Length: 380
Ligand SMILES: Cc1cc2nc3c(=O)[nH]c(=O)nc-3n(C[C@H](O)[C@H](O)[C@H](O)COP(=O)(O)O)c2cc1C
Image 1: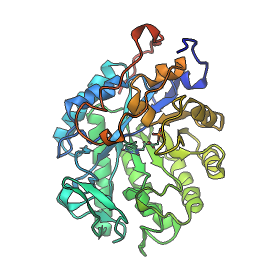
Image 2 (image 1 turned 180 degrees about the vertical axis):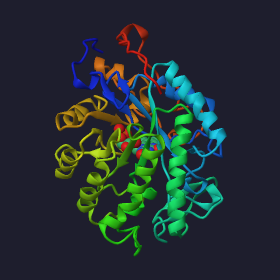
Image 3 (image 1 turned 135 degrees about the vertical axis):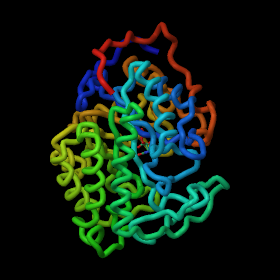
Image 4 (image 1 turned 30 degrees about the vertical axis):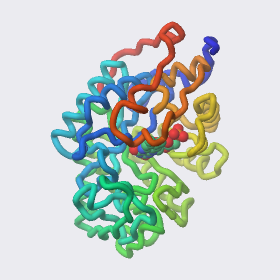
């Protein structure tokens, strides 16, 4: 191992809204299924996130804004007082460790099951997930979701806004609205899942409407500088078929551009892709890019440093990494020192309970760690 510090813009301090970040590395949201069955964060989650507090920003895992939005067993929620109290323990621990944290708000839409949530999933149209889904009793066929009425849509927009207020009460600096990876907002954006003929379907202008309404309502609830949005142009997770990918994001990004949001976050961002470059040009504010590291393959030996630097050079402001932070609580130090990277030990442990594969990844010996820079304290 070398102790020669790597010189890189990744380690420059920067700002995000009212927050001062000690570096440009963001821990991407990672669902880890360590909450109680009704979505209350457990104390072990405070340990896990505090271990990773040296990230410039942590975006905490997908948290459901209402009961019907629950995707999988033991995911976190943020729609009642017990959820707020559970998350408060986590944000307190992260703040005490010197970190800053947003919470991702995710409604699963058709990615859900009555055996998990007790409710029939809802979606823009009655188009089921074309895959089996994990439930408390194992993998099962997906059910046909119930088509949302206009009243359902308005109630869901209000649930997102209430969840954002709860997140701030729980001590988060802000929230990330999840419009990516095949969940409810993405289902509204995509032709394959949105067959509606009303104002929320049909043309691109109709299909982006729900996402724009959710984002605006959340921004009105807690202030736009506390709100980010995650998008995944072209990503086919969860059986997604966007159809007109370019048109969707050419309409959506400018529609969000004047809200004054904290950031836009692009999943699997490729600096050579023309659509990524177009999004960069169209987005006036902070752009977080989550690079393509090779899904389902071992992490690159440099932990994603070069992929991140290429995206910074292409105009991204912050770099989000998922599995590298999962397996390396001290990822920032490791990248800065060019130290070896822990691989994800056993993918089976990503979504199971307990400490194994969660809070037990090793850190570098104290003697090899660089001294952390001290920043002025900042508000939540
Ligand atoms: C265990 C696990 C859980 C994930 N959970 C979420 C999530 O809650 N919300 C989300 O938007 N993406 C989620 N993702 C996707 C990651 O945020 C990230 O986009 C993906 O892992 C690619 O980045 P990486 O190659 O740096 O890991 C998850 C990925 C993994 C491996």
